Image (cartoon, rainbow, N blue to C red; front, side, top):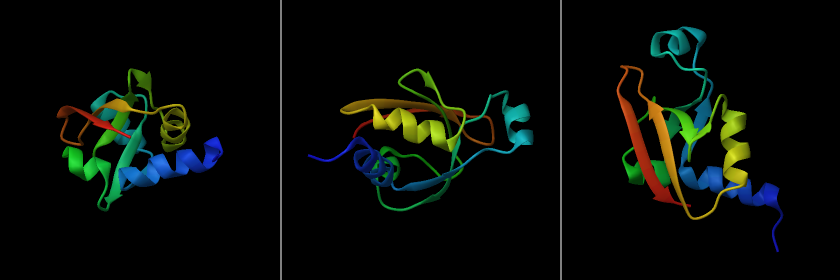
Length: 100
C-alpha cells in the first residue's frame, strides 16, 4: 500500500503541469486571493480537459486554492472526479471537471 505523500505526487504529476503562484498584480487585476497558475504543461489530465497555459486554479471542489502548496494539499485528499474553478489572465472564468 502506498502512502498519502506518494499518491499526492502522482495526482499532481498526472495533471501534467507545473504550477507557480500568480503575481500580486495578477491577483489584484483579477480580484482573486491567490491560486495555482499553470506555468508549463505536458501531456496529462489538464491538457486532456482543455486547460490552457496561464490558467489560475482558484478552487477545487469548492475549496479555496491560495497557492501551489494548497493545490497539492487538497489533491492529497481527493479521488474520483474533481471540479476545478479558475480564471485566465484575460479575466475569462472557466470550469473543468475530470477524474483523477
